[in-house]
Length: 165
Image 1 (cartoon, one colour):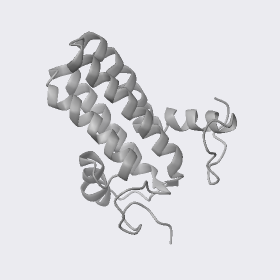
Image 2 (image 1 turned 90 degrees about the vertical axis):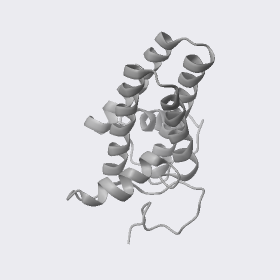
Image 3 (image 1 turned 120 degrees about the horizontal axis):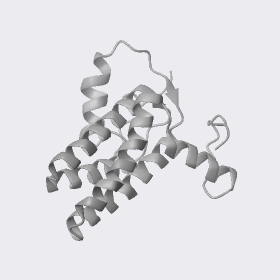
Image 4 (image 1 turned 135 degrees about the horizontal axis):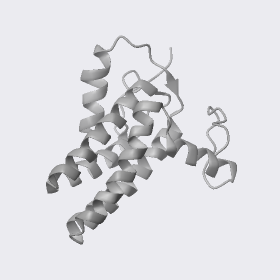
């Protein structure tokens, strides 16, 4: 049996491997929605929620992420779509990129009071999320593959070559 976030042993820290790509794409759609809401409202708690969500997913997968829990416990079980399993390490790396972006966005918007610049960064983050959600193109996974080929990150033994970068 293939393990996933719902069938893996209960441990708080760690990232699922493999990952259901359908769930990953739904989480990306949620990130896109959050980015749009932040640009529309500039409501300060949303900046923190976005960054917290990425931090939680990097550290624990969906276990402590409100968006991850919503997707894996509520939305995904109701979809009649077969899972498509993909390696976890590149997805975790992509969440790390999201964490870096969302933290920078929160600092720029809340710490420096530069919402226009934060909106531009949100546009980049939202574009990455849209590519994942709608086209199954994980930019962070591509970056992980590129860095692994150059020996800068640990290669993923279960990863297929993602092609030219």
